[in-house]
Image 1 (cartoon, rainbow, N blue to C red):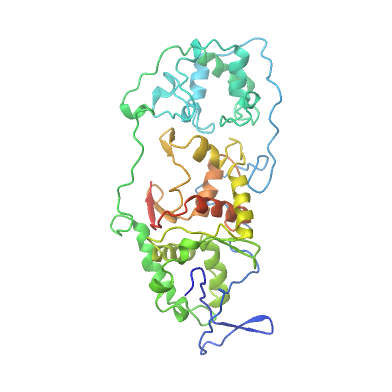
Image 2 (image 1 turned 60 degrees about the vertical axis):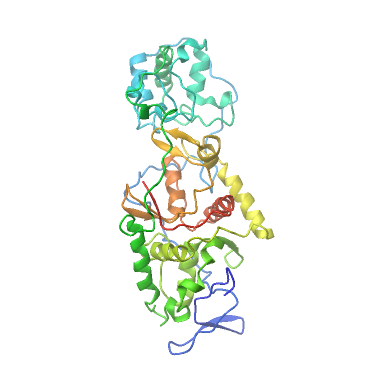
Length: 417
């Protein structure tokens, strides 16, 4: 079978239409995998996962809509600073306000110097820097007046802190004049070692994500409403799909967007078996894990040369750089400018190696996440509204990410905290 030439269905082309064969007929091979190009591939209306924060962030940018308030064009004047440093010390460590200042900065005694990050500069001696009250105030309120591409959230402009609260924080910053004292070496982000995953991700005793492979094998042989199963056409999936998933996602003109493995499973299963395996359902995740697991060891090699792929990758690149949500972060802020740094206790990795292990088992959640759910969580976590899993924007972003992982060998299911 040609790479990327997957066919699973019992179909024939007749008079320009796709016609399903009877349950007793032999499936017909086609040069291109059949898909149901109509309708949505995920639930509608989309409902956010119940365990996730249920904030409505419609007034801020998403990958599909620009809505955030504009950046200020000039610094706000601060005639007289009337701040409470004790209140400010509590505010900079308030993790309910977008993760707190400690997520990115060491700030002397603030928060007990408990696992601060180092995305931003150490502010433990900022009181000795000679900055004016106005400068300090505007750096906190909205640092875009000094650097339009800053990764600092616009705390004031986006309403996370009031003007008085920012004044309290500035009053605290002015008291910081000596280095932080860390209780342990791990609390010092400059000495904290990067995480290294040592668990054997393909061992079912260590990675429950492997159980999806067994479940998918059963699904593979389960006939759908149309009388056919995946196994009807693919009796030897290990041979048929040895490299297929490594070439996904890819542009598909029939739906006018990039299709990833998960959406392909939904549309192909419906067209050829009648199964309804919507994205972000258990059956879809299991099949996605299985198809990628079959291609383990194959180097990622998505189409980057066709005109359609080039345009989609460029769109994905633009989306990766788009500032989103109340915290005003872009993918490239965390996995570009700030890569290989700590945001509190979380290591920010480079784009390469961020794709080859998906879908992955999340030990902290006891669940399998595919890459689209990971995209969704990133947005919700930075206080933006997520898109539906089958959104065309996610397809472009996935293809861009996959292209940056060219040559990385698939190892699915992964295992991460």
